[in-house]
Length: 344
Ligand code: KG4
Ligand code: ZN
View 1 (cartoon, rainbow, N blue to C red):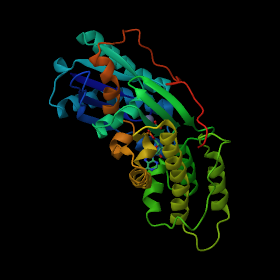
View 2: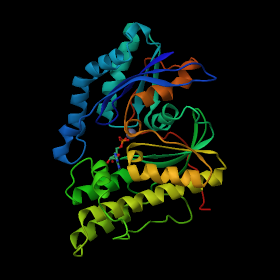
View 3: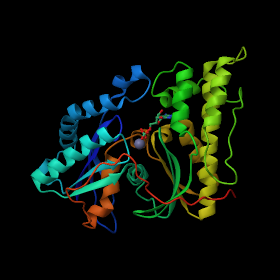
View 4: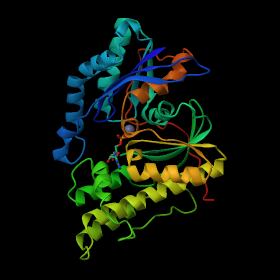
């Protein structure tokens, strides 16, 4: 089965073609994964401007879909289903993708599937690691979310912990701005931190009561204050390395504790912050120490893309569980119920 994926929930216009084998063994392969970045349009505003994002999606989506089909050496007639991110996200941005997907489904007589953005980040792991098995614990960490999921089976997820204030990506972005690193800040902090000494500053690692929930607003404030009155001898690179260390240490520690509490054999990660180089190496180290198997998508599959959208739609598509043309875009939507996991 060939699935065309479309993703326009934020500021990247994305299209991809993914091949899925069968319901029992999906064996997902991305035949193409095209991302038209809008970073250059939003950079001078220091964040995503929704109006600009929507207008650009309108201009870029058709060429991006054509490019995805061409790189997959596949024409539209061979596509078996169209999958589109329909929730949550910037409403105007989502509507561009959903309208295009519905128009194509209607005109071509192809089945349609609406996909939750967070579920698609979870499924990027099946493209990265075909051996990944349910159940697993998955950390999704992006500009808007820091959520730890217990993934029991396709479509059955539970939130074990989440941020009570800022997302980790937001913390990276705000601190990067204070360091004059521009937007998006995460990749810039990642690069700068390579030349820094993380032991120069000890930024706080917050605990949220007895739970595995995350909190990054205190860390953000501590970094901003530190930058205002920094002592001599501490370079921007040292601050970047210390900030990165504080964020990554907490993310890795909570994910490992959740995996132990849930007795799973696999952990997985996703979302833009999961592209962070220190996060990737610390997860590899921690998983091997704990005897856990790890799925970790390469950076291009961590940040927003459409291959993960098609992948997340695959189990429904293979089961023939499609949406109809009443599919709507929704700005907010909870993927899963929340169970507060106590610290162990
Ligand atoms: O998943 P994503 O592409 O979009 C959302 O759904 O939010 O995540 C974007 C976030 C931004 O906050 C960006 O700064 C962060 O991911 N990010 C990184 C890195 N690459 C992207 N943070 C740390 N290190 C990176 N290498
Ligand atoms: Zn995302």
